[in-house]
Amino acid sequence: MQFVKLSLVAVVVASLASHTFAADTLADAFKNGKASGELRAWYFDKDTEKLNSSTAPTSVVKDTTKSGDILNTALILNYVTDTFYGFNVGATMQANAAPFVDEEGKEAYKDDMWGSGAVLSEAYLGYTIGKTNAKIGRQFISTPIVNGSGSRIVKESFEGATIVNTDVPSTTLIAGYVDKFQGRTSTGMGSSDGDAPTFEKRAIFLGVSASTTYAFDDAYTVAIINKSIPNLTLTGQYAWAGDVNKADDVDVYYTEANYVLPMNGFKLGFDANFRGSKTDLVTGTGVNAVSYDGTQTAGRISISELAGFGAAFTAATNSKDDAVIAGMGNGASSYTATLVKASSPSLRANTDSYRFDLTYDFSKLGVTGLKSILQYALANQDRVKSAQTSADYTSYAAGISYAVPALKGLSLELQYEKQEIETTRYSNNTKFTADLDELRFKANYKF
Figure 1 (cartoon, one colour):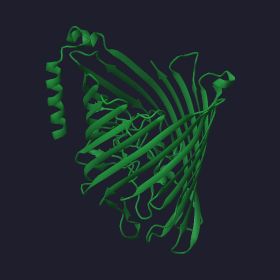
Figure 2 (cartoon, rainbow, N blue to C red; figure 1 turned 135 degrees about the horizontal axis):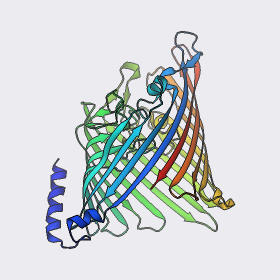
Figure 3 (tube, rainbow, N blue to C red; figure 1 turned 45 degrees about the vertical axis):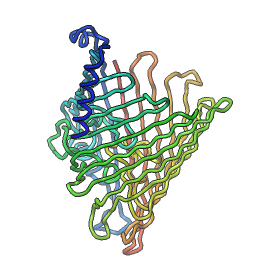
Figure 4 (tube, rainbow, N blue to C red; figure 1 turned 30 degrees about the vertical axis):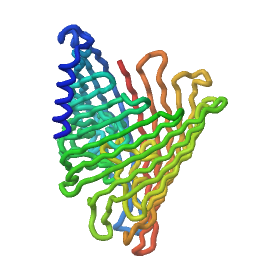
């Protein structure tokens, strides 16, 4: 809490020294505020096969706990006041309902989509002076390793404080403190009542799990983004979380370089990323124990804006004996995360992962707002220490999105991914396969 106290003192002192304000009165600050909102209707359907351990090792059956469908609807309302002596107030409410879901759908999507209710995901006091912006309270945070995902009907949020400064030319400095986290569903936050998620001293630590939250004390982060060299962006971030799972501290670090080379009629992109985590945290026991002192090195080469086409090849490799924690929140994604199944396979120990993307913007054919993507990905995990299994993941994914020109604010998106898993069991030298299929349709209207 020392960071928060010092931030508040700095904000108050600065506000007393400043006499610039946008609104003439506090009442005007509220009257001149801006309101926005969004309506959502999302349909998800997945089918999962697993090993049937009671029969032959190669037999797979439908996993009824991870197969089902759900239709969820949401209303999102946001309001931000005008500034008064540099201060402003912002709030975002997320309300959702899944009225037609059956028991199979509830079980399949309990961690990320099932639930009905409302949560005040943002409620913050902001202050701006010069090129420094501070926020304290509930807020959406989007940085490489502290990042709330918005890929589900309810977006993840954090409670704490952030400061962003751009006084140094071509440089953004960020500092943050996180006290609580709000996940996607109440089940994901440790409850099973089917209500909206609440803010708790629990959080997703992606790499340990994408669905289970773990208790933590407080978390701090600092980051720097520099664009001094033309076409080159350099990013570095560090985060620390205390007493994760009521046991050990977690340190996470992230570095990235992005270079765009403009060519005649297209652009070439070159990206490099090195990340890692350090902690004494261990999950599982015996040969199934997993430690998280891991690193990941990743690179990407891409081409874009080539007559509407784009393509990218990405590769990543992890440390041999330890998995990698990507950060807090499901938005802390890895380079080789796939369209639907995301990052989890690519963060495991002793894993090499690859992804190929092909995109097309149909506006080049006169269909404004229509875009598509195809993905092919591999994540190959070799045997770790004395573990009894290794696994290979193969993913085929496709997506198409359409921002409807005739109705501003309306967008439609369809996503599909098929993931095949081949597992080698060393205890009896056998292999078995399993399939995961998921379809997602999203209709959004922003106003």
